[in-house]
Length: 200
Image (tube, rainbow, N blue to C red):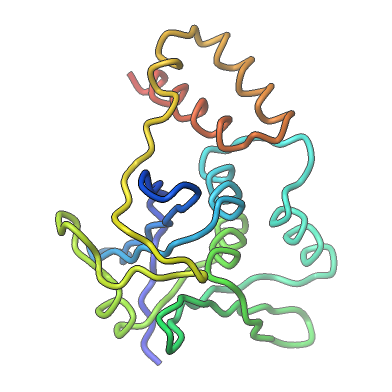
């Protein structure tokens, strides 16, 4: 079976339907993208890793990585596919000294795990063609995923204006407070503002 590698490029927020997010995957070495709708907890788990937010306790996906690595199991790769009803699903290819096993997974959980261990994410040419879109197109194709219907998504600007008026020291303190109270979405937004200032 031919495999196409995908790269995670970010998460968007649906401003129309509260609590709906989409993770955007892009063809490695190409431009075609696949949006997969996910829930808030999974978006939070992915965003924390992308923004390198340090949490006081391990999140669920961090815990799972710790457990499987403790028992000598490695996540080799993730395969994203589509079920008959259009919902995205995934398979985890796990390996240890006794051999390989394939485990069924939600696509959002699979992605959250893959980015924590730098495991490659793959799909098929058929899925990329059917569900993908080119940047600049107004809408992708049928963007269903993880049992949630999506509409057009866009980046969430919430909190940006407040952050721009804060000093770096204030932002660092706010990010620490947010992480300690397990408000990882807020911590991720603050981290992005700090990264933006560092790049300037």
